[in-house]
Length: 321
Image (cartoon, rainbow, N blue to C red; front, side, top):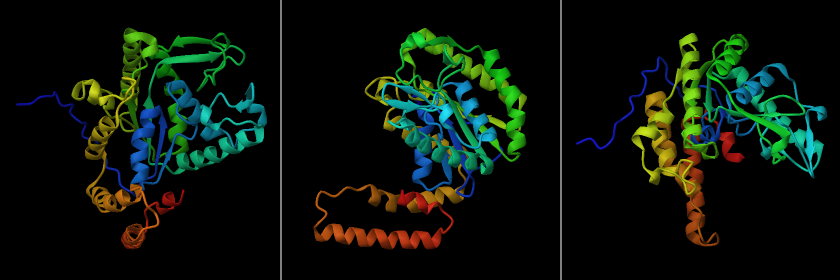
């Protein structure tokens, strides 16, 4: 007896392995899956502008990676004691413009190089609702706790999203001809819009994404993360305490689906070999002075040396960060 309606995964005409460079941009759901890939030492860059929820801000970030060389002081704004950029989330803000630019440009240069070499770009849209700055007139990535009366808020239409990307995507594919896009819609609910408003938003994103996939069938593909959570995991135990974000258990379930859909056998084998070592790295002993801890460190070092010899091309530098 089947207890769920399982979402069929598309038969993608490609597979991904540890040799493929990946760039991931979008909502916090992008970070959840991206972090798993990073943990398994895939060559990946995750959200060089921070968490980005709406399609226009994602596109604006991609345009910047193509057109800009760096961010400058004139690109910053100040609110109370913090300097920030409307193109970035709050994680880049700091008390001085110099430090803020350093934070922004370090991530920006990594993102620029990642887009140049990426074979796969994962884009996760979270909401069709956007905020326009009244002073700058542009869509912002984050409002940085500035009073609401400094912005106008609206829901993008399907047509607005489609036209914006149809105008931009030829430039993106010219910049990186080998690039494929895997587009997803985040299952995280934006409840401040209300139940109906959230559904209208998600429907807008789904319709726009499908139209773009039909326009660029050899370049754009869809992964049904939204549908998997809505149909296979339709139970509040798969949500975090706020009942809006997905739980660790749900993320693990999505990862299994992602693994099955995209990764080839070679990478699955690498992941299986890495798991005991990574589990040992995650272990946090209560006593770092005892013999057991010293023995564990020696065992872990030997495991890493063996794995580095077996898989020398993996992104081992990530373990040093």
